[in-house]
Length: 141
Image (cartoon, rainbow, N blue to C red; front, side, top):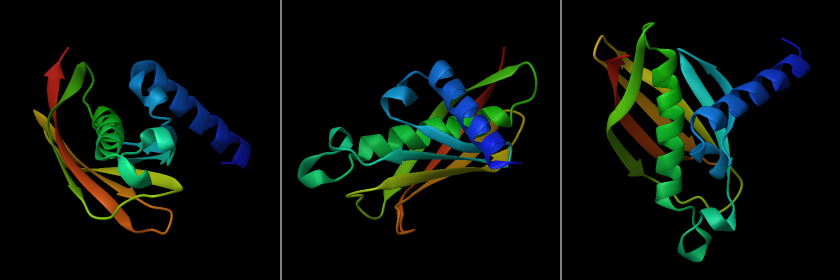
């Protein structure tokens, strides 16, 4: 795939995320890639995403992870179903004080009634900032 095609796909995936989940636009989520094997997206450190002392707010990391994990879960759904997060747990390991945060979601379990997804948030230096594990219910539409 050429760089131009790749940029077009990233833009299309990001616009789709912002249309289907408007909160992701407020979070400045940018989707880099997406398939049933995983979703990669990025967010940016900004003062408005922070808590005290210029640290990214844990809720920001959790909201991004929930959104990226939901995309991964959605891409693993059988036809005629939808999904909803029914459980989510986040561990925080390191603060984020600047730069780009990469969110990488991958399925841990894809079953008939549940999909479990793990989403890692990494800082620009490659250090793991947080890990979120969420369970998505598979719902017949």
